[in-house]
Length: 533
Image: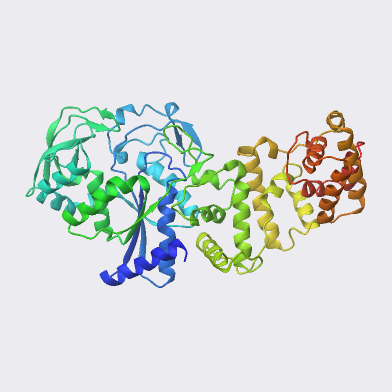
């Protein structure tokens, strides 16, 4: 059974015991451009939600944006509403706003009402483009509406127990620490409180700055009181309070939360809020190009970046894989993911079979979960690598003509899919393709210069294949003939391919040779192999 279906069964069982509507929740902090690693939170919530809903469970899927969190740091790069990154230092000086809630920090692009609104929109645009569509809630608004008040009250009523609980998980906190901050009515920064009043629902504070990520925000020294609605539960208490507000049945989180905030959250939920914590699910992070993404370093990719090079359903398919395993998304080899998705689509429609029945069913399920609206019938998609090769050599009209000639497309739907993928392939070539995937057919003089670098046996092998190629169009037979010719001329098959690539594109490697040759003019290919074209 697919992992999402296993979790759906747990959600259904839990909902049956508790009664009422089930809830699946995920959340993000709009600290800047949220990258595709953060998408794990949404996808790991969405797939079990989708599976449980399909089984008839009454269930909601919500996404909260933690916009009352403070601005802790300024990322190196920030995205505009179109997802294009800009250096943050060129936008505005954000140092004066460190320590202020994100909902009260100005939008550096001056197009939205604040920092939070801007980066939440960029994030949710990407989430919705993938077809997941959770209902969005701003945490700041939940405070303003009084949704947190019952949980703040319980915290203050059990403040001694809460202090001891915090001290157990955070060595820097004492047992008399109160895990609640006030928003300073003078400078707008978050400040630790020193007392509270259960009758007036006010807290007292001295704005003395606050430690944030090994730094300390500046305090203005103001002494005063604010209403509870003008404050904030600290993270370890706010997260479980949100579970209570939404009556959350299930929520996924990364392994970084498992040892710390999840374990404390379970105790807080039971000991302070008198509620049962949701079903947990711990997922592994993934790398991109072998590196961990970091907003502070600037090596982040948005959903919008990925949708420039692949279809939404193909990208979401990546998240249907086993979440407890770390993966590396290699952008230079993105075609491998696309091939896997295309294969899954064939399996789903019965055009291809997996190695075993279990794998066959799991592959079908992964496809079902990734595709928002499944097609009524199967339509072929062009191979990504092949599309990336021909789009460098021909315009769209010529590409479609070639694809039709080679029987890669027939129906209007297949032509439509091909045109869309060719655009994606073109973007990939420009943005992420390695040098050996970039194709430029050499001129006659350039080819002659490459020919002079080859051995006599390589040249003879190419000439022999040129004669065979002119009369034989079957690629399987051509492949067998290459093996035969290489053997006869005492060269390796690898040396044959190197020679062919060198005279056509000036490199020792390139796109799959026979499909590449097949899209060229046949007489030209023959002349080039013979050393005369």
